[in-house]
Length: 511
Figure 1 (cartoon, helix red, strand yellow):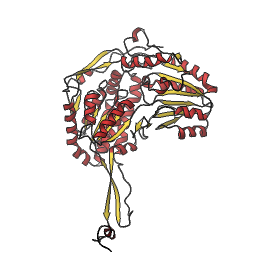
Figure 2: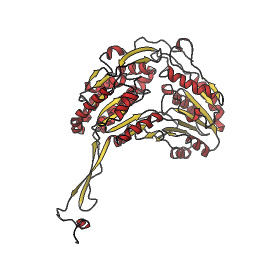
Figure 3: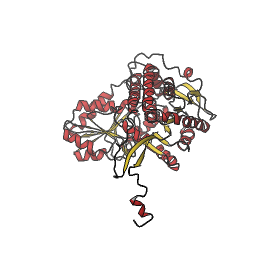
Figure 4: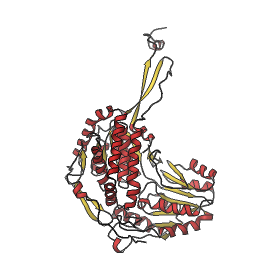
């Protein structure tokens, strides 16, 4: 269905905002020096909204140097001073929320209601959370663990962090990378996806407006092959944090390992959505549609594999398909739009390829095509439900990253949980049941970094986000993210004032 309502022509004026360039280094915008340009394209229309000069390796070097220069002063600030700066940052973000929402919808094709209701408020809340968390960088209490010494722990910043963020949630991913790093006293160079740099640049400018010192947050907008790999391998970068596909994550790990860096990886997902036969069918069907289609399915935690116990299977397929057919595709800026385009025509064609190949071995219940008419010029694809695919097929095992949900039946609880675990990924999952014991078993036995019960997708700043298995390691958000962005130092004081210690005999003397 597509009935987008009346679109508003008032989009984000990207060219006017970034006429000085798409690199943000040492507190100011500048042009990239790679000698090549790239276009930000509105995926809803195919129209170019900003052409900018890509970063080269020299820009990365300049950004890392700025971050390195800013590090001693920022790391030496008190937790209270960093906290105050982050509180001001949150206030600036809130004051410019509409700009952020429009820029995000323009570059990504997200419905404006999603940017306004999820991406932007979530980022503001994250900033406010880390403003408070900056004061709580604590270690273990001091104590005399050896008897003759007092030990305590210091939690210290690592140094310059080099982060690489994806295109599906550019604003939130920038926040997830930047905020815990700087709250802990690090400085950062962030490389956003070259497709979607607008909100990362706005985010860095807002930090400067809030009084965060120049060089603490730097943005280099370039390709992964040139700017990204140079950043990850840079000898002055002490840590790398990467969010993206598992395949690219392996390459990042290879480069980072060569320079013995701290490494945090948040990679792909193929989230199972396990519906037991006592589940609320209506709740499960609504949850599946929302969980599968959020951000046009371009979400590593999106519901992608629905396993439904056989007594509910046919009814679930029928109800989920009916709900999908009510979802309205349209202009992201129109108030009646539920679902926007995919990020690009390339991604749209990739998703379509998965679905077209699946026709040979599964049933496409609804969707499975790009819309025509006024939406044909955009990267749109209809919400798609596929049923009866084999467990070992590519639509079940591979990350499609589009508005596609695959539904399979299971018989016993053992089988349902086993199928849920039967992919290389382990980022997120959900279990649907009215039986607390059944649901609790699913949360224990499903191997994923987050398991929801009777819901799918909600995230909160206070809780960590990160995966198992090929979905990577380490955590974003929450106080647990400080484990990624700090290093622990053990400090030990002698309490005896004895010059010759008893243990010295192991080296010299017979005492």
